[in-house]
Length: 80
Image (cartoon, rainbow, N blue to C red):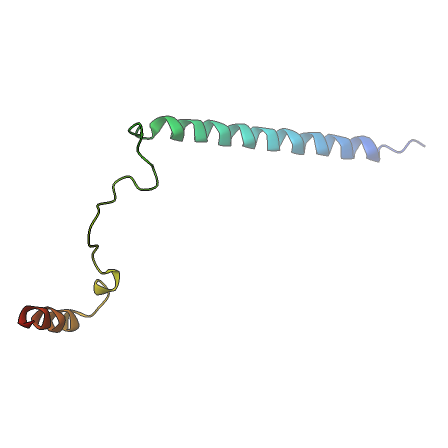
């Protein structure tokens, strides 16, 4: 009697390979569309620091302070 298991396994591998190939093609198409939708960069401008304003930056932890503490800090700054 012939063993048909290897051909079944082979068919499963082929189906899995086709699914992976289709998923990769979909990802490539999605990345290509995202790349085309991006705003073009200004020549000579570093994309990592684009839009950063030089000078003093706002204090990040000031946003999370309770409102009464912020009011106290503001009055202390005004008095100084």
